[in-house]
Length: 144
Figure (cartoon, rainbow, N blue to C red):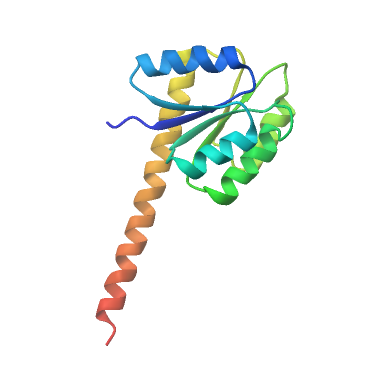
């Protein structure tokens, strides 16, 4: 199975660097961003399947970033990272379109499980879109 392309967004440089290295060693292509604005810029330049997004960031926080990601890149699945018991923000994230959430610090195996689930969800959605487009093309061909 093809591995998803991941965008990792967090204002903590050390967390980004460490997590990116671990994911690279496991064969994942990982982009990083240290802010919501940088994440949106990265998504405009590269195709990404799953974004892992910290809730608490200076400037544009994770919830605002999530809403913009879903507005401009609706097929990107987003996993929210919450720390310090910010479960209210996790709930808000889920209501705003996040696929799932994790608490920090998170176990890499659990993170990869969530990424795999999010990627499978995206693939199912893309398949549904292909089926609908195929049916529409067939109808257009049948219409005189």
